[in-house]
Length: 118
Image (cartoon, rainbow, N blue to C red):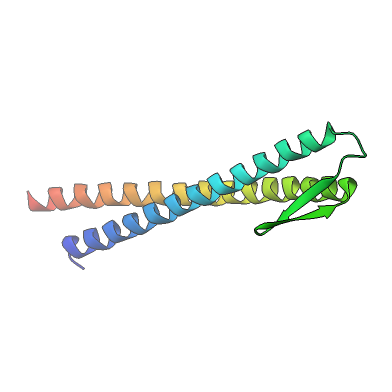
C-alpha cells in the first residue's frame, strides 16, 4: 500500500475518532446535567415539610406523588446518572488513547514517507 493511501486511511480514522469523542462529550454533558438536576431537586425536597404536596413531572404533565416515593426516585436517578457518567468517562479514556495512537501512527508514517523521498 502506498504512503498516500495509508495516510488517507489514517486521516479518515482520525476524523471518525474525533466525531466519536465529540458525541461522547455531548452524552457526558447531558448525563452530568441530569444528575445535577436530580441532586438539586432532591436537596430542595428534603428541606420541605412532610405534609407538602409534591408532583413528579411525566412528559408534559405533573402527577401528584408521595414525597418519600419522589425522594426514592430522585436518589435512584442520581445513582444511575453517576454510574452512567463513570461508564462514559471510561469510554472517553479508551477513545482518547486510540486517538493518540492514531496520531503517533500518522506522525511515523509521515516520517517514513519523508525519509523515503530523500
